[in-house]
Amino acid sequence: MKKTHQSQHPEITVKAEGLGISYDGKTALLKSVNFSLPKGSFHFLTGPSGSGKSSLLKMLYLGLRPTWGKLHLFGRDTSLVKFEHLPSFRQRLGVVFQEFNLLDHMTVLENVSLPLRVRGLDSKEARIQAEDLLKWVGLQDFIYTYPNKLSGGQKQRVAIARAVIARPQLLLADEPTGNVDDEMALKLIHLFEELLKLGTTILIATHNREMMTRFPYPELRIDNGALLQIPSIKVPSQKVVNA
Picture 1 (cartoon, rainbow, N blue to C red):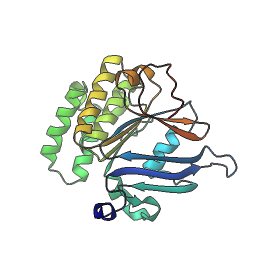
Picture 2 (cartoon, helix red, strand yellow):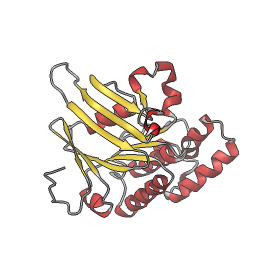
Picture 3 (cartoon, rainbow, N blue to C red):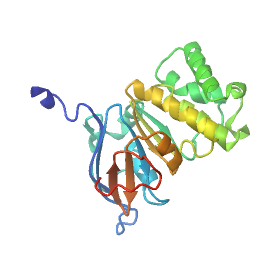
């Protein structure tokens, strides 16, 4: 019994309480969102385009402050995290944006190994790990290529490799399989599952119902500013009314 009082949400990676955001001060994109992501869980984030999926991910990454409500990451109230502490706090997260956010002046290898080098890992070891991961995602022939020479699908794979290489405690991905073929999409989900085995908490925003059927993890669905929690997807057209 005493265990529950040692720290707030000791086994909960993310906890949102009444979380909401409004960009114009009048209309709420997200109204009052409540959910928890246990440590080592895998969830899909779904909803129509413009429903607030990307905004929610940005709040979880601390790139966007909620208009109201409370957000806890790793048991800590994020409103108390000072600006100067954000970089070190974000080192516990891996993030895949739709915009990729690759550094154009760095090669593919340098982009992917950067999170390890920021953490102080020896440059040779960081290179070895980056090369292994790039081989996994089929980019072993592009390690010295600069991002502006890559296709959208190749940039996506580089962004994913960079996000997962340091084994983050929380992985947030916005449509991570949107620019790759079905075979590579499956390979990437299997890569995420390897992280899951290591205890990483994973939240993936997607429109791919077929993928969700093949990998029946719980779903968080945003609908008209509210969030519905759905245990799993068995059939793409199935509706869960008592979630």
